Length: 481
Ligand SMILES: *[C@@H]1O[C@H](CO)[C@@H](O)[C@H](O)[C@H]1NC(C)=O
Ligand SMILES: *[C@@H]1O[C@H](CO)[C@@H](O)[C@H](O)[C@H]1NC(C)=O
Ligand SMILES: *[C@@H]1O[C@H](CO)[C@@H](O)[C@H](O)[C@H]1NC(C)=O
Ligand SMILES: *[C@@H]1O[C@H](CO)[C@@H](O)[C@H](O)[C@H]1NC(C)=O
Ligand SMILES: *[C@@H]1O[C@H](CO)[C@@H](O)[C@H](O)[C@H]1NC(C)=O
Image (cartoon, rainbow, N blue to C red; front, side, top):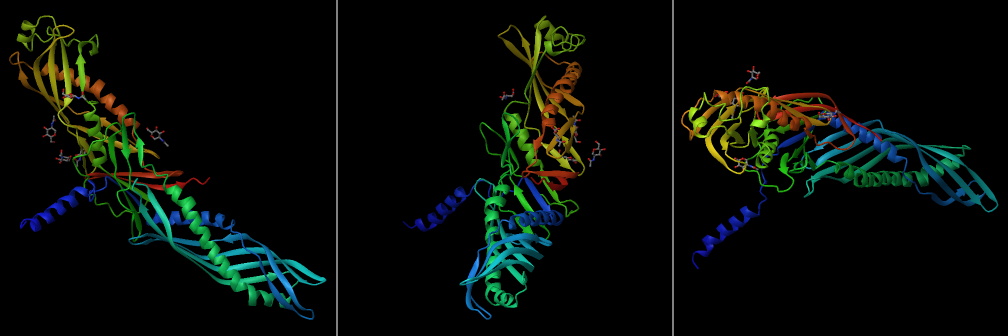
C-alpha cells in the first residue's frame, strides 16, 4: 500500500503522455502567412462584400400617433424603407492577439429611401423621404480557430455599429413632420439599423465566410496512392502585421497511413512583407513524400538485358562481363544477368541557402538468371550519387526537377571473386540517367497543389530557398463571382 502514492503520479503521468495526441507540440510542416499587405487586401474585399450585403437589409415600418397642427391627433407611418446605396470608405483588418482579427469599417454612409403617410379621419397626406445616414462605424471581432478535421473556423464574437448622424429630407417640406422624425423616430431608426447591420454581419460570417474558409483543401490527392495533409495544426496566430496559419504539410500513403518518425524542422521565417502571402514549406513535406514512395517500392528497380538499347556494346550477359569478371563468365557461361536496385533508405532532400541537394544511397544486387524460375545472387554493389534539385511554382502548383550527378559504384560483396566495376558504372549511369531520372522527374513535374482557398489566384511569384525550407511569396487576387 505504501507504494501507491508513488505509483499514482507515475500512472497519471503515463496516462497523460499516452493520451496526448502524437503531434502535439510538433512543428508544422508548412506555414501560410498573410502579411499586412494581404490583410489590407482582404479588408478591401471584405468591405466590398459587405457593401453588397447591406442592400439586403430589410427595415421595419415605424408607426405611431402624432399631433398634426390645426387638425389634432392623427396616425403616421414611415414605410417601405430600403437601403438605396451605401458607401463604405475605409476598412482595416487588424490582429486581435490570441483571438483572431478585428475588422473595422469607418467613414461610411448609407442612404435610405422610404415613404411616409399621415392619416386623420377624412384627411390623408403622403410622400417620400430620404435618409442620409452619416459617420457609420462598424467593428467586428472575428475569432479564428480550427476544428478537429483541421479546417479553419471563424466566428464573430462581437459586433458593434455606431451611427453618428442622420439627416432627413422629406418631400413636402413639412416642418412638423421633420420634428416628428427627429423626436420620435430617429433614435429608434438608429438603433434598428445598428442592430440590423450587426445581425447581417453575424449571418454572413456564419453562412458565407465560414463555408468559404472551409474550402481550404485539408487533404488532396497527389496521385492514386499519395495524398497531402494540409490540416491546421492549431488556430491561426494573429500578431501585429500578420496572420500565420500552421499546416501539417505531410504527404502520406492513401491506403495505409503510417506515422512519420521524424519531426518537421523549426522554421524561422524571414520578416519579409513585400508580397501579400508567403508559404514556408519545410523539407518535411518533401521528405515525407520520399518516405511514402520509398516504402511503396516506387524507387525499387530492376534492370535486365532487354532494357539495354540494342546497339549498346555493353550487355547484361555474363559474356559481356568476361573482361571484367572472368570467373563470372566461366562459372555461368552464356547467361543473362539482372540487377535489382533499391534505396538503402528514403532519400532526404537537403535544403541549404540557395540550393537543394539529395544524396541517395542505393544497393544493387546482381543475379545470374539460370532459368526463368531460378536466379542466383552473385554480387552486391553499393551506389552513391549526389544530385541537385530545382523547384518551381506557378499559380497553383509546386513542381520539381532532379539534375543528375555522377554515380559512384563500389563492390560490396562478390561470389565470383574480384571484378572491375567500371562496366557496371557505365551501365548504371545509362540506366539512371535515361530511365530512373525521367521516371522520378515525371512524378515531380506533376507536382502538388498549394493549399489555396477557392477563387484565389496567385501572381508576382517569388521563390527563395532557406536552410530547411522553401519560402514562396505571392500577391493574391480574389476572383469575384
Ligand atoms: C524494395 O527492394 C528492397 C530490397 O530489395 C526490398 O527489401 C523491399 O521489400 C522492396 N520494396 C518493395 C515495396 O517492393
Ligand atoms: C546539405 O547541403 C549543404 C550545402 O550544400 C552541405 O554543407 C551539407 O553537408 C548537406 N547536408 C547533408 C545532411 O547532406
Ligand atoms: C549551390 O549550387 C551551385 C551550383 O550547383 C554551386 O555552385 C554552389 O556552390 C552551391 N551553393 C551552396 C551554398 O552549396
Ligand atoms: C557527395 O557529396 C559529398 C559531400 O559533398 C561527398 O563527400 C561525396 O563524396 C559525394 N559523393 C559522390 C558520389 O560524388
Ligand atoms: C502549373 O504547373 C502545372 C504543372 O506543371 C501545370 O499543369 C499547370 O497548368 C500550371 N498552372 C498554371 C496556372 O500555369
